[in-house]
Image 1 (cartoon, one colour):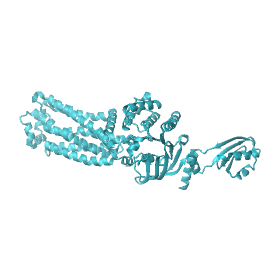
Image 2: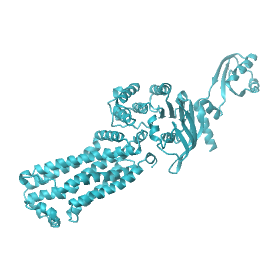
Image 3: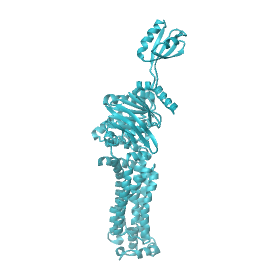
Image 4: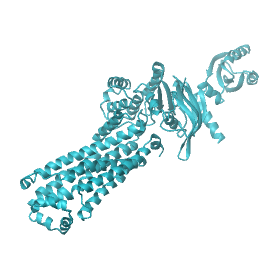
Length: 314
Length: 274
């Protein structure tokens, strides 16, 4: 089931387009990453799917509803961590969470229990009665994430969730994302600049640039869309014969050969299933193989390849 | 519309206002001045200063004021000695329009803080992501400003009534205040002015990016009070019950028109795109 389905959606702020013909689908229970530089349209997308803005053209459904018409129904099922924590600094953590819990229609008993759970999880219990204005940036971010999770949302939006967090807490947030996905069946949309983190948690990703969608799909689909070949790194015991590169390129399954040094090379291959065939060929050539390591292009490489390609097109 | 949601927003705003002493302590001085300092000046200090009452009654402006008074007001002053005349004229009539500054100041300050202040501190967006309607949000913000402004006005009126009756009680031998027009001012005109002031502040706040910007622009509404004060001093306009009634009708009408425009401007899309 699609939790989000955007079909040729555009949105215009005054005279400029913030989104232009964006289409993507997100399945229930997925972690979906929206990637792109500032101004790519990530925040506008979150606003649109939560019914804060209406599309200039195109159509969309979120949790089976039209977000602009059924905004209240959708927002009851979504939790959003905005780009800035946007907390009431003159109020305490407890007052902040109580206020948002009330607006989400939570009963007093459920709300108090949930607040305690979240404060404990984010290590904020000792500071529950302290004004948020006195909090560090990391504490504010943790509290803002707790606010987004307060009412057990079906669909969670996290805009830069690990910014301002030290590595330990950032790791905790990553674990939490996987935990809410696993235990509560929550679907999660993450907007982030931290590509390594996105790669750790996301099932699907969309790469955006100046309001346009450059590519969307699973990480494997994105690698293919970016034209990044699957690679395998080979290390040998002895220096390689000079004619080896030419001979390897004659194999159908080998796309390219990069000699790293006289005892190491990287092959671009059509797929990883062809590795045994290459290995058999090398053994037949009496090459003493020390290691074979498949190299999967990182999301970062995919991202920069697609962004660079977009810049070249421009 | 779920009124509980609007009330939760108003409660949150009151909690924030309570913590924002830097903004609200200075404006507490105004009602203190109106309900304590001015009444004591006319009931306690001037009557005991040599020539204080004579200077007041022989002042050419005051002579003009008394001469231009309509019959129904002159009737109230009949049989009073010069000190009592000064107290009734000043604290019962001339000062009446100035008292309206109290609801205006509180409503415009709280409304500017509640609408523009929330935008300025960038907390509005988190509120927009909650499952409440634009209407509930709007009414929550209006309640946050209207309820304290009206209650403070009523409390000030109650204290003012005690002071202006109690201090010169020995001289009057009876409770002379409130005069009929005050009931209309406090329970009809004040809420109307509060509604007008909040509507105007909301309208300004949808465009203004800061609390100060919204507050300063909306404070211009105090000019309405100043016009009445000058009108009364110059004998052009006396604040009779009929005038107060009409004034209230006009203010409610203006509030309804501006409020409608303000409510129309108060949509999530407009707040994020304007």
